[in-house]
Length: 402
Ligand code: B12
Ligand code: SF4
Ligand code: SF4
Image (cartoon, rainbow, N blue to C red; front, side, top):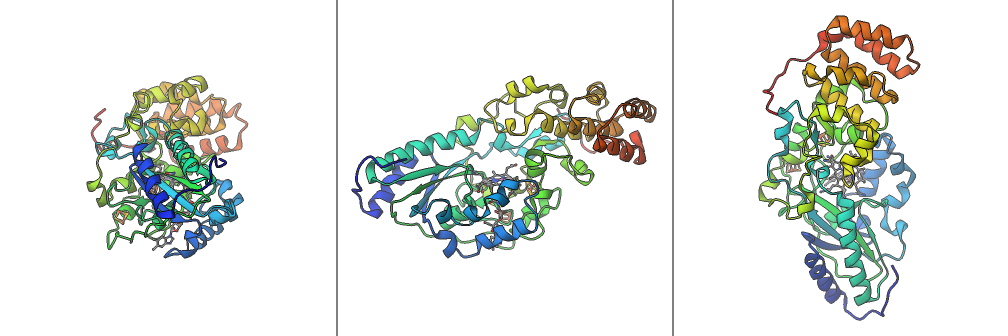
């Protein structure tokens, strides 16, 4: 965005006006840091990014490696940036989102994805803020919500909005872990805020809560083991070791955030558009198994769930079905054995192996292998047969409450 008038305000004035404008637009928190903040931070965020990528922890999120140099330093993304305004919006749920994990007939959708896509809400507010700031200060501005190679969490920590907890997400004393972040880069020199200090202390609750042991160490996440990565970003087949721990989570995971004790200070989000829609409010697995492309797009339009596309989403739903011990899903699982997508067919094989009686499984195996060409699907049939087909079916370990 280009300036419309020459600079008129001092850096402290401009900062306080900008903060007031951000609050008036509905942001829950706003703080400022310098564009070179990562070079001055208490820990080496760029080095941590290198470590993450060099160890392959980004999995198939190739864009993280492709834009590594720009991500390491906002100055490389935009050399004229002098200050970074970090805004945050709470999406704190009113109740504990983990309750759905006891409802094996439901597909658990992460809190952040149940309402309108946060990218759209934050970006439109940030653009308004940027226009006002540019008009008042004459500065050049750019806005980002998860859309550019920018390390939003360490920048938010440098701005004092909170600290990066051991689960790696930003935690705020006021809003707990349930915060979306956005950034406004400006060519104006604005008075920076002081960084917040780490308040995790000896707590390790988030590390212990992770169902897939995705934290090799505190403050370090191997994304390849994270259910958010596996169910949202990962394009391939989900490895066998993760399928039972995924349980009924069909899109994302909230566990490490939900257990954080700092959430007890967080009021429920005041943004009505983040509230769960009927279509995304942990829907029945049976409905989700029936989604074709068009129904998927209609159901999840405008929400973050649309990101996976139908095939990856149904792949996830089949894992939830396989973990449900609910044999009423069998007709839909059988139909998905003939789906056009190998991702879907492979997970239908796994779900069948968990739900069907041995004889039915064998009959379907012979029928499908007569025509199946995809090496991964063939391997699934082989592995499922070795694991004993229906003898693997789980016993419900929790009451069926939905
Ligand atoms: C890639 C990505 C993912 C990946 C990888 C996550 C990750 N931790 O990196 C996956 C798909 C797994 C993911 C999952 C989720 N994500 Co995400 N994701 C991103 C994205 C696009 C980039 C993050 C990144 O740069 N990672 C690189 C690695 C190196 O960073 P890092 O893990 O944070 O590592 C830091 C620590 O290791 C730290 N460090 C190392 N050593 C030490 C030592 C000490 C003492 C300290 C203090 C720190 C420290 O340094 C590193 C750099 O800061 C950001 C948006 C953005 N542009 O920033 C959103 C973002 C981080 N995601 C977000 C959300 C909401 C989620 C989920 C909660 C969604 C869900 N419910 O399913 C989960 C949370 C999982 C988790 N525990 O992190 C929010 C987080 C908001 C917040 N409050 O922090 C962001 C900021 C998007 C947004 N604009 O709001 N995400
Ligand atoms: S989002 Fe879930 S799987 Fe990912 S690190 Fe947190 S608890 Fe583990
Ligand atoms: S759960 Fe405990 S260790 Fe994890 S981020 Fe919250 S305070 Fe820190």
